[in-house]
Length: 398
Image 1 (cartoon, one colour):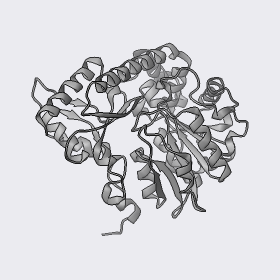
Image 2 (cartoon, helix red, strand yellow):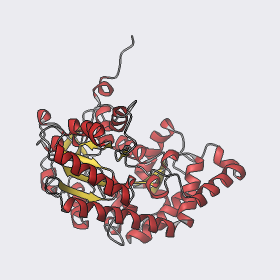
Image 3 (cartoon, one colour):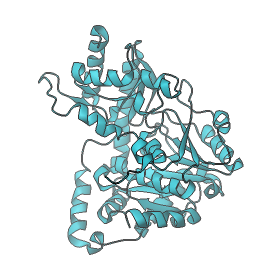
């Protein structure tokens, strides 16, 4: 048999796919159907007006079916630049925006312009597992920095990890998996650190549309020289339920996007024509609808906060956007807890072992002690059901 890339072989399997295998062939009692809170994705298709617009695009726009520009639909790039300039209070131009086939691809492209085998990139723990996977499979060391009890990273702790082969620090806000929103001052401090050490700051804002604070979540784009340090990533999938159409974005300097273009042309050639046009239509027509979606997510967040506030056996470390990150009360590691919850509570969540190093790998033990609950996939009655089931297993044990 031909050989395999050792970096790829050493990379852990996709966590969401692993969790899905836990429920393959399983049957659940009629009175206790599966409550799937594992994947951070909208459970519904795009709203009907968008689907009708997409059908019209399919029927009437031949260009939607052809190869397009590698860096994306010019009209969508211009709209993102205009909205970002208004939303963040800074200067963003269309040539500083590239459209990608989802935000994971945006991360992969951005890192590919920065790092190669043997370099390193700093990730706060808990990290988003696909970020870690991409670094691992490319032989780029993921240097992890612990976070405090509020899941916020310390810039000075990160500074101690920087050496001559460090290429970037990656922050996700609102955070996946932790749910926490990084304060503007903290993001600015990381920006200043990265600028001083001549490395990039990658800020993944996949969930920015569901931030709890009205207005701009930070002022990084108000810096006229933001492009020398900042690389922002974004996803249209969560805002407009376009997960299957794979539309994301990179906002960075034109010089970096020239390198991104080489990478994208070798991977996907161009983003999906239909998905891009749908994202543009959504930006033009669904502002009020998206505001309503945000309010619904904030109501679900409030329900999660209230539910955990009265349950002392469970420690809520972070809650926001799509996620609650909680410690569990059981005397077993979180991967065993998550599997047991499938059988005992018809509840599918992800263990902290998917988001950070184990004790045997130098971890602090937080990975074994925590779970991620993607509460955005449950309505308010579903969240009530979640807590009923957690109460039952807390009383009876696993």
